[in-house]
Image (cartoon, rainbow over all chains, first blue to last red; front, top):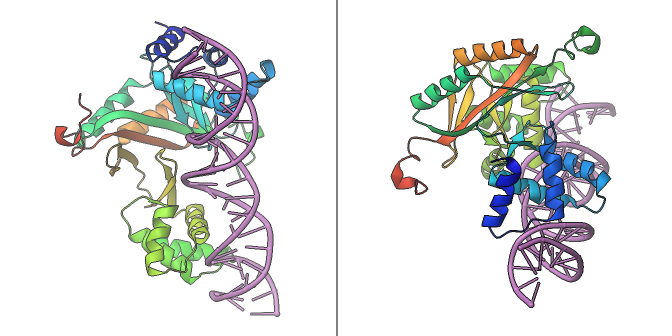
Length: 149
Length: 149
DNA sequence: CTCAATGCAAACTATTTGCATTCGA
DNA sequence: TCGAATGCAAATAGTTTGCATTGAG
């Protein structure tokens, strides 16, 4: 079942309603590669649909997260971001501290070691956050990295 | 050189001033095991020193981070926390989502794998964040975890 | 004495909420 | 029709800042 169906299903089961705004937001959200903040998406949507409200975007993204088709991520820049959740494709992030580029990675070995760490301390892991911050290949070129002394 | 000396040194070199408030904050901060938010520390200090201001605590913690004796950590609960930085003792965290317990861990293998991931994408890592969220041993006992169906 | 630090209150930022109105089922 | 959703504006919460005053060097 794809994300659109999951959402529609969730809405139906909960007795909620499927509005135009929700469909517009869903479409833009799913078709994007980027990690949207509420504001990013709001500004983008407003170009096509000037009547849309920030609160609606916000509440809709929360709803996406609630029904599992979006994941909230926080790169510590002061705003929450949302990415489409592709079932059974958990991944972590590399974040360029200069240009903001976000690269996704998966590493089963790390996942495995995490489990071992948790076991050692008798923790039951529910979720984790693993982000590597640094300079991407472009930004670490000396030409664009004047901070090298 | 210990953290107190590092701080005093930093203050001197930068032409800043060493006030009573800063010493009070430094002492409480360094002697704590916990991961203080600005508010935590402010409330704690205010008991002994009722005249101290929130902004002073905030600016002082920022100053600690700036001179390297404190690390800012964010467990996604909406407030920044600070922990004393013990030189060359990098560690990550296990956070209990039920009782808030924080356990520190280090795992050289994971650190190594991170480097490999970064290398693969040509990133130069500056820092990372790695947190495992779940239930600690106490909180995963069925008696205190009614959410087990 | 001078300029940094303080403490207060006010400004900010992202997020969340109250409420009258609109609209989907 | 009826309750959920919307859009606006206002409320929150954490953080940051302006400024008059205090105080360290």
